[in-house]
Length: 129
Image (cartoon, rainbow, N blue to C red; front, side):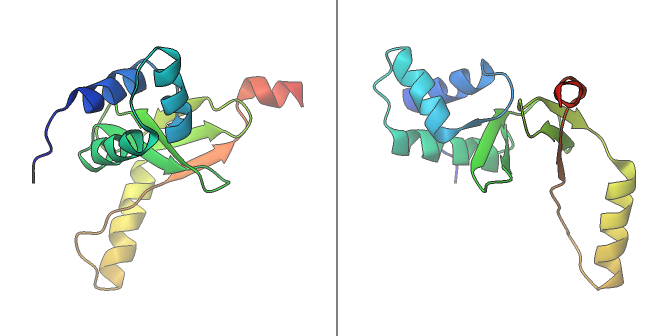
């Protein structure tokens, strides 16, 4: 089913694209409201979920379990994410891809998908500790 491209959805897409790093639905909703948008929080949640499902946004869970979103910039990839400042670096991880395929095949799984996000401290935050 193809979703309609409403003004609300475009507003969420534009706000997400202009945001550095990952942001929660609540954070994006606040940003939209501060810019004068009347868009509702439930609409922001739906639009973000749709964008993530269509591959137009990355979605991950923070260590605290909160869903975070970011405009997607490339195909399948993984992230290094700073737990302190939120700096996010997209990385390719060929060994992870090979391991995932092999582990799935070993157990008779096909069409396996995976998500790998590595949380740590970036160099700048590590230097402050």
